Length: 362
Image (cartoon, rainbow, N blue to C red):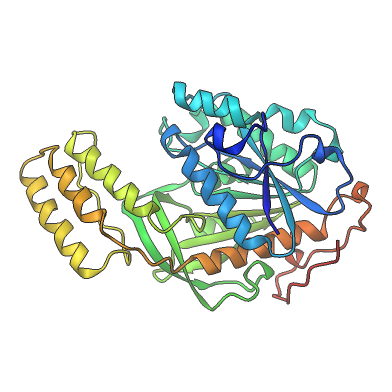
């Protein structure tokens, strides 16, 4: 079944710059027996806004199966944006304040909250900090499930339980093999070993998570936390990685960081993404890296681009990402609010034992 977008101004897709099927105006006010409503709180920077929208919409489409999904985009007013980002927010996004001001029958069934590059050393000093806490309160008060992605996951556990993230000596960057650490229905049907993209400097201690009642679901091969959950009044799901990434997202981040190094905006040359490029591509990029370390010349970025433009990336993580998100959507489906006319049933994700996922009839 398709995924539809509930945008602020539902104009023709080809004329608005966001090419995704639209929800018919007023449809969210109709009985909620046939679809799920997902809120995407997109905090990413201006340059990646469109790509992030597409990544999550495409992943939800792959995960939806027989479920009909309506997605509303939300923005935080404290997130500083340039004119292009402001125009996009003004055209497609609703203010997060509308989330708690709308009637309960229009509430999203679940939220996805993205992160962004921080402007401060302490996340509690970020301008959007109080608004993020309000999202957490809303989620807990209304027993909904929320997905917290990468830096949003770090901010959420800091706000909830005072768990501080720890900066690593080098960036976790590439495709990491992760093993199951705990049996949980969110992983139902997944192979014991899964591959997940990561792009981050900071991480969360498994011991601190356990002490505060979190369950670590998957770990990288060297024991680092990947995915974890907490059963509060609703199910909170945290991804330190980026299962939503498209095939060439890491490629784009690598090219961006090379450019930052060559312009003097970064002190160290970026690492090649782990388990991502073929050997021949890595050799070509390392030769350029040697030149760049010897002399920062901005024209070397065109040489990097020439190599990367011909690279084909095989997406080895999308099937697992779609499976995990399908299990999450099924959890939401089984817990649709009683006002929709559907009996609320206990979700398998409230237990730790994996079980088959069967969709109820609409």
